[in-house]
Structures are given as structure tokens and as C-alpha cells.
Image 1 (cartoon, rainbow over the protein chains, first blue to last red):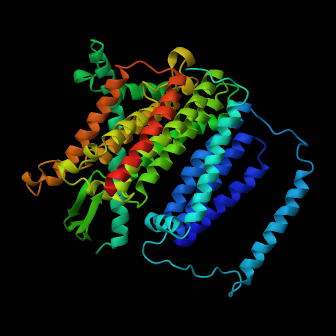
Image 2: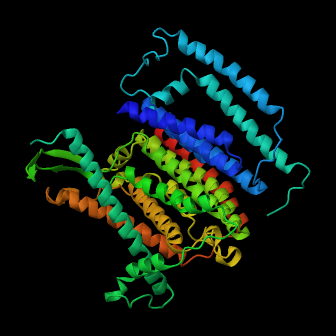
Length: 171
Length: 352
């Protein structure tokens, strides 16, 4: 049963990614990317990581992709112009191969060839909100604080950029 | 023959889904009727009263009429997206109901059906009790934006596009306040699970409306904005945008948008009842006999939900629409800071 679910989500994720790259219409690209995000959330669910799965949907599929869609709709990019990515295409292929090689090497270096090692810590409560919250506020407190400051800087920066050169007008 | 417990559980889940969908769709149909009758009452008119006794068959007549209307797709529209946009908004609205608990646990006694022995089984009146229930609901509401945004874009019409863009901006802005207003409840309950949130409100004075009144106010306002209901219906806004994102839709596709709007209203009302008014817990539960207590609780839940549905209609026909800049100002400059303050004060209150 679990295998069938895995195959389904994996197939949808891979097929949508391929279709997204081949698709010329940016709006369809965004929608296919959302499909990829949701099927990856399905894969997280199968790994008992319910919190990560839902956050994947809320943050990526729900918030970030809406902004993508928003920009594409506003700019009315109906079709990607031909020959725009002349240098990018070969570079992308080289980079993808370079990235994929170490990943493949890591997977193959595990004992038992291509099979994944058993998941550690699959005890009761694994992947639940309590556990993640405790970890974030004890063991990983410093990274969380740094990320928070970074996000705050981004917000302030966005406000400064939009206000640049304009006199603050009253309501 | 004894039925395998796994299959039995699956069958019970299917039955629950079937009943729930039936109830939701029937409520949607009668909610449109109620909206027309209540609006007539508020405006001192009669409203639809000719089809059947008291006009009660009006929703049926409306449904038949929608089905026989011509399905029209504009020539310059993006046909695929135009076709799937109504489904993209209806499906998340219906999925929210999966985690809403309607009642406590019930035990079905063992019985025999067509020669199959079915054992005694205890099940809760909720389709699935996810341990990230609240987040799941927020996820579904954020997915619902796509239906409106794409519906507006795909018709290739400036009014629908404006409606779609307004809706994306509005829904993203109010999602924040909606999510943050619930944080206080999560802190007090210590869980995202819907059943535990309901359990935390066992006695009348424990209802979160008494402990989190500000959060309730923010939640109601943000929910109205999320559902694009007046006074926040700038997405449709007849006077400026003709009809907003669904201007070009006709026939059943148009009615799917309407069904989705009413279904998400029901979901939001059920959430208000669940999160702030004790869910299916009712005062004086002990006075009701043990056989009837589940019935009493479910009925109480439905009455609470019904009251909030009435509130939706009441507000719609009483308040004028906001201007768009006012809407954004309220969302970002009033509701969001208030929701954050509520979180801070809840924290202080818990520590002291």
C-alpha cells in the first residue's frame, strides 16, 4: 500500500517537473510547480513528517507561489520569447550534472547499494509539532534567531525600497 | 462472516464523508434561500415565496435553471484554466470539513447486515483527527486563492483580472491575521489537534470566547475577508468591476463559484463554533439523559454554526462596502498588530 502511494507521489512530482520545464506558458509553469510542491508534501507525509508536509503546502504552495502567479499575471507574460535563454541552457545542464553527481555518489555509498538506510528516531511523537518546537527553541535556537533577524531585515528593506524618493502622504 | 476491522473502518469513513457532503450541499442550497429571505426581511420585502410551501423548493428550481443555462466560454479565454478554476476553489472549501469535529464518540452496537457480522465499533463524529488540524485548515484556505486568481485571469477580461488580483492581495493579507488570531488558542490548548481544542472547552466558562474575546473578533473579521463577503467583497464589487472574477462565467460553472462561496461560509461558521464556542460541547450536558447526549451535542453544534451563518447574512445586508485602501489599512495596520498583541498578552497571562 505504502509503495503504491510512494510511486504515485513520485510519479506526479517527476512528471510535473518535466512538464514544467517543457511548458512555454508561464502560468502553466507556476501551476505545475504547485503540483510538484503538493506531491512532495505527500512524500513528507509518508515519512511521518506531518508538520513539514503541511508547512510545505502553507508556505510554498499557498503563499510563495501565489506571489509568483501574481507577478506573472500583472506583467501579463503570456509566452516566453524564443532564444531568450541561449547561454543559460547549456550552463543549466552542466550545473545539474555537477549537482547530481555527489547526490548519486552519496546514495550509492550506503551499504546495500541504492536502498536508503533505516530512518533514525522513528519513535512515538516523531515529526509532531511539539518535538519540532522543542528542538527549534533549544538545540537550534541560534539559527532560528539569525533567520528571524534576516527576515526582519528583508521586511524593513522592502518597506524602504517602496518608500524611496516618495514623500510620505497622509491617508 | 465477520467483517475485517480495516475494511469496516474504511467503510465507516466513506459513510461519514457521504453524510457530510450531503449535509453540506443541502445546507448550501438552503443557505442561498435563507440569504434571499433574510435580505428580504431586512429590506422589508417578501422574498421568494412562490415555489412550494413558503418557497422552500426555490433552491431546487434555481439548480435546475442553472443546469439548463448555456455554458459560454469567451473566445479569447484560456479554455483549460477557465474550466478548472471553479473546481480549484470548490475542492479546498470542501476539504476543510474533514477535520471539523461535529460530535463526540459514538458506539455502534454489533449487528448483522446481509449475512455479514459487523462488530461493535466506536468512532468519533469527525472524518479525520489530524494532529496538525489547524494548520491543515490554514493550508486549505491558502490554496483556495488559486481558484479566484486563475478564474479572473483565464477569462481574459480586465474586470475579471482586476477582481482576481484584488482577491489574491486581500486573501494573502487577511490570512496572516486569521492565522495569528488562532495562536492564542493554540498556546492555551498546547495542541493543533481539533479534538483536543474542543476537549479544552469542556465546561461552559472554559469556552475560548471568554478567554480570547479579542482573538474571536479578529477571527470573525478576517474570516469575512477570506470568504470575500460584504463588507469585504471588493473581489466582486458590482459597481466597479461588473461582477469581479466570475463576470464571464455562466451556467453550472458560475453556480460552482457560488457553491464554493457558501461552502466556505459554512466551514468558517463551523470553525467559529469549534474554536471559540465550545465546538460540540454544550452547557447542562449532565442534565440530558445518556442516550440523548450525543444528539444534544450535535444539535447544539449545528445551532451554533447556524447562528454564525445568520450573522454572515445579517452583516452583508447591514454594512456598506469598504474602499480598497481602507481594507488593506485595516488588515495590515489594525488587525495584524492586534493579533500580535493578543499573542503577547496570552503569553504573559499564561506565565503569571
